[in-house]
Image 1 (cartoon, rainbow, N blue to C red):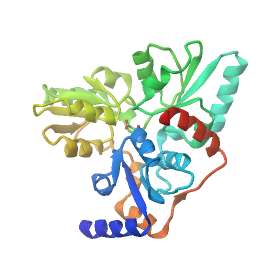
Image 2: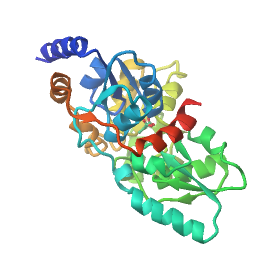
Image 3: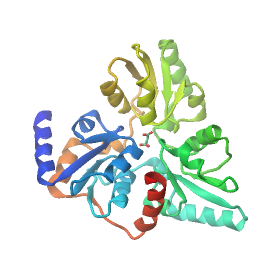
Length: 309
Ligand code: CIZ
């Protein structure tokens, strides 16, 4: 059954001249059939190098939208148009515009640094876009005499404040997956695996980050794990499908999801909307498709300056 649908998708991919990009938070069976897997920085950059007419983006809406913005001439398909993001939802563009106007009235001289987990309309209101992979580097590019308004993830923002040593005005958003890790669950995992190494995503709350030996985005996690030559237990505080990618690339080690076997709430319900059936269906029908919107033009300028330069 799985082999059959893989063959059908392969055939459709040829027929439609398509490339499949998949985020590390997609189910393993989707990552397995993708031409390329990655975090949002790697995938956004890869999308600009694709030589097929169509990109099928297996990820959430803002990721496919970013691929379209960076490649207006390509057809970009998203298997499920409702694959959203709690972080993007936490920062609606009109609310951000209102807050920016208030800061201006108060005489605050600031630049807006926006996490890529945001809508195109929010990106269009921003000075910079960051991903978990390039945030430190971009924040260091903001002139020292400017305040920074960081949106929408308060946990990533607070992590970056510590790392870069720069106070920022933080928007009050968070990721529903990373927000739910509890430090008590982590402690019990650490008791179960006393020699284990805890690796956490910077979208996790401070109390989880403080109890972790390594904090970094998914690409940084892969890089970190690659430096261990002896079999090691890793306790992983991020979306649970990341374990599939870790296991595939570095099978020597053992990976344990935080909070562990008793709870599946560390799976992103939005990413889970994409399935192999929907992937096949979007190739068959050419829909749902991300279509160009007027505000993409401004978002494109900010994305290009932030991710491609
Ligand atoms: O930047 C991304 O792709 C996300 C959402 C997480 C990560 O660290 O890769």
